[in-house]
Amino acid sequence: MTLLSDVSTTSTSTLDLGPARALSCRECGHETPLAAEFACSECFGPLEIAYDFGDITRASIEAGPKNIWRYRDLLPVPGTVREHPNTEPGLTRLIKADRLGAELGLRNLWIKDDTGNPTHSFKDRVVAVALAAARELGFSVLCCPSTGNLANAVAAAAARAGWDSVVLIPKSLEQAKVLTTAVYGGTLLAVDGNYDDVNRLATELAAEHEDWAFVNVNVRPYYAEGSKTLGYEVAEQLGWRLPEQIVIPVASGSQLTKVDKGFTEFGKLGLVEATPYKIFGAQATGCSPVAQAFSEGHDVIRPVRPDTIARSLAIGNPADGPFVLDAVRRTDGAVGHVSDQEIVAGIRLLARTEGVFAETAGGVTVATTKKLIAEGKIDPDAETVILITGDGLKTLDAVAGQVGPTATVPSTSKAVREALAGL
Image (tube, rainbow, N blue to C red; front, top):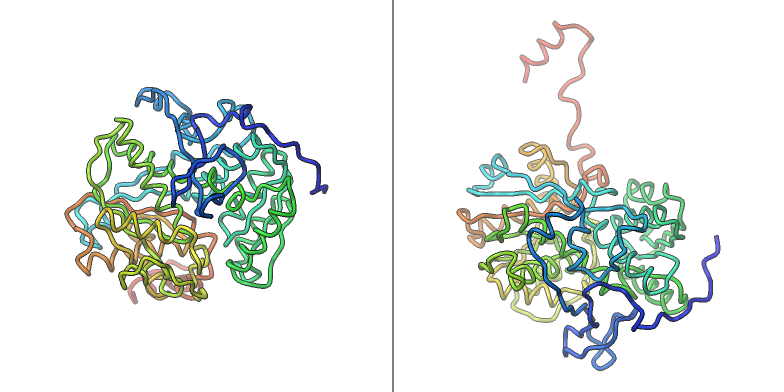
């Protein structure tokens, strides 16, 4: 596989990135032309996409395809995005979760179940947007550092598009996520270190290889916008309105901030009434730098070394941590954290009540919701949505030894009756 090639610089004036107008610094507001950049040239703050949206209506969205490209006119992607092979993620189900709600004491609970995406996590959304932008920006190899779900999504999206891929993972990653990345045939490198070590290595490689698009590094501003579609879909599926409360797992923090951005954009565009909502973040105790900063009233996130079964959330130095704090505080929400034992209990509770098997991040979200209700931070009477962002088949080790056959019996009806009688 050839991974090095000459890449011609694409002129900004010839780029087709839909309504995207510029890159804007989230710290100082300085704007720069659209390019493969992620840090502000003035203050080194993170960049995000600034837009000039056209005339967008509910009807125009509803007439679109049954995937995230129904929101094409709200994303930094070419008008021709659907013409290129891609995994077509999105429009996953929103479930009315009455049984789980009854267990938690919530009167009106919904689950946004993103396990139905092509590689069974929300990462398919962000990668689809990143790939579309990377193609327009002149890249030819799709790459990432990952805690697992992103590895799956990048390898699959590259295979579908006919691109080479280079994926970096911590060598301690769950075996299921290793296999479900390697099967797509790209280059998979296991790195001796945790995710923050892997991420530093990816940043170095991005600077060395001009044609490598690291989705969450040098094309991060475009990639991150894919998470807005979760917010868009929740609002559309609720009948074009915003929920009163939403609980979102926090790794880098980008998903939470972009769901917030999606709600805000829908309100500004008049697609929904801009009603108040509260955002709650969920972390594992073994990697909870944002939750700790929130509880201590700090604005600065102190990095930690992750130690949790929730490996997909194990980012000890979350890039969007300060912006999570901003969103949560602005909306009068909170950030909580739960132990590994509580995570497993959350996985099992969701599966038992709603038939949804979530990975460890989902257990974090359910368990944190339960804890924040007990602490009086989540209103039990308010309409609430919780995000389930990955499939439990990816983290079977978390429940291994916790669940199994109710009994082992001989192949006779009498044995079955006796086993049932003993329950």
